[in-house]
Length: 299
Image (cartoon, rainbow, N blue to C red; front, side):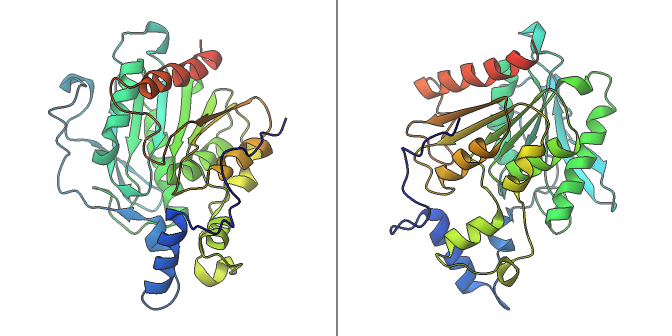
């Protein structure tokens, strides 16, 4: 059944979203012509290992220096693999393959790793090329190569069951995880938080005109075109107050996907606030809904 659009205005709304304003600014100020790459990729560099000494995750649960996996073109992809807390035995052999958003680096998303640790799962998180300690320049093809390198490393671990891997993407990471789920069809699950339909749609909606995608960027990241071919159960999470990526994008992806599928429109959720803050009702709901969905398919 199609999910109704009750929460947002049209993507051609008169009042532009933060996404529209950011894209318009990127188009106007891009040196040497129109580009969207600088908008999509906002990684920051990291010199040396991250300092997670104040993390709730014990130091013996991960390699403090981080790990590296080699991509097909030789790029060394920085990653961290975090062991399960062991608090929930049936989750201890399930691994969250987490693809982060377009900002900063692993350090910025470590709080998500802590949430998965609290849930009882293993987690692999990695930085795309041009982010953190992963050198190089980000491209669509390059991000997929980085994800493949991290995924291949993960499968070499004796503590990872290939049949118990959950692809979880956030924002830009939704595109990477959708591609990975399409390539590696499983009967586990794909979770997309705050996803977009495609770069073409963001260009046309953000620039408030039907610009040809090739005029602005070579990026595609066509989640909408891939979503019917992922071959695994799907859970889409989107805030109804997301002013960065249209809530309608998540609804459209849900409507276009094949079952089994679920959609959670988070009341009051903005682009970065879906998991809520510690002790909040939203945090409690997030910590209940996400594992309940995973446990449904990986009991």
